[in-house]
Length: 525
RNA sequence: GGCCCCAUCGUCUAGCGGUUUAGGACAUCACUCUUUCAAGGUGAAGGCACCGGUUCGACUCCGGUUGGGGCCA
Image (cartoon, rainbow, N blue to C red; front, side, top):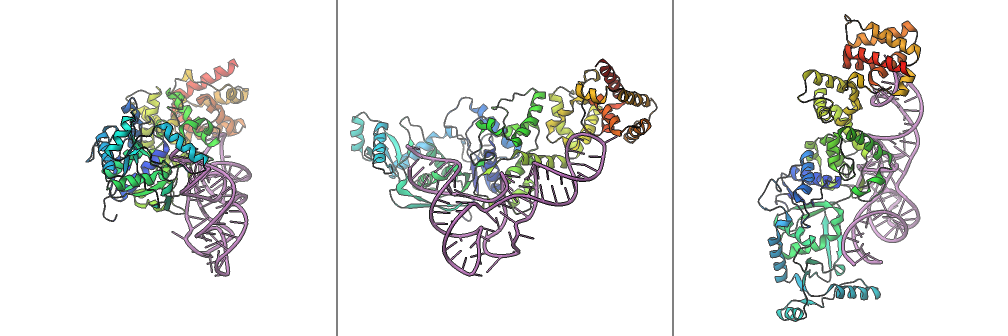
């Protein structure tokens, strides 16, 4: 293969969602292409002719763009081998089938499904592996005429070699041997003229001069017949690399969108989902498994993950450079990636580890960047207005700063909606009020703090901190009593970040309002 | 059912015959720090599926068993 340019591809079907497994396959293809200054192709396997083609494809295009896995040839990009939609390539497939027929690599078969089934049943009874007898094969005009006179309609079958072995040199698995006597004469074109996957896939790979086929292991068993097609058609053979599955948590099953409910029984999935649902609720997003599913890339985009974090995590799901390097920029991945180091065993998806990567990437962003990431969520939730006023932006930045890594994904900002809602609408947790505000001593503390907030008070964080401390010593209570009373009054909750930060974020007036209101509420209970 | 693939801590993995009392990361647990909640710091627990063989020596090589997965039916 030496000097052949590297051309790789992914060939997804427009399914309306971008599965994580596809994302990882895309990533590995992308990395391999970039590393070799090659071409990354996106070809759409839409032979099933779904309705709303464009709509069903959009999530995949969007997912690839969001992840920064730009394709060089394909939809919206064009390229020298257009079209990149299989539904528009029937002429190519027809020509390929005719060539296969002409060279004897395929034949017209006039058997009825019942006849095939009968043969299969006989083989089964004899305890043999079924292999079609080719009894209704027609290779000459006379045979054709004879069968057609009987009213039969043909399909096109591959005329697979009936002896020998085929060895696929897989770049990840090494040599894989197949016994050709066990291969079936698979149909490549149905009676209605439509083409089967193996045909379209192999023909396109040949036509598009794909040099390396990097795809999921589910295709490994199908490789011999694709190789047969490729060879019969005279295309140079690409190299193959079969990737292990992205598996579901706790098993080696392929991760599936449909089994979300089961995954949610696991703590690590549940935690992620709870976090995401809190965001979705405030954004009024539907949380049906079809539209909001952690198995799908879109989910992470919606909740405010950084694409870099997903990329990094996905890269390590089935590949490792060495025993210690965990954090890679995309450039580093392009430099270090190698198919030889891809694992052979399925790797199960762990949302917790993904989240750990996310936190790391998030915290690497300086506050102004995190602030910008977070603003769209506040706007979408209707907590702030567009355009964002400078003082609001400043306040958000202060929240982001104070929250630190409590804001793990951008959508987590919505946890702090209490800073944005009007003082009189703040929801106070009754239990928290009961404990930290209602007792006489606690009320007195709040009143004292209120009194200390004079007009001329130098309103800075250190001043607030010492105010809290002084108040505690003066009243002979623990600082915690003061800070918790304030916290509940100001945020409605008994947990959150440093109390001086809360005070500073709200500002003197709002702090006064909220203390006053908390005292009133406490009075009523 | 036939064929193919796979098998190191709960999870992702390093390990490509001796450097290994099997290393790291996430998660877990304990302790610590702490003005709540997080975070931080320190530490702990936890694994080579099994059985044979090859070899002076196997996590590493070979065979088998078991288990898991895929493809074709």
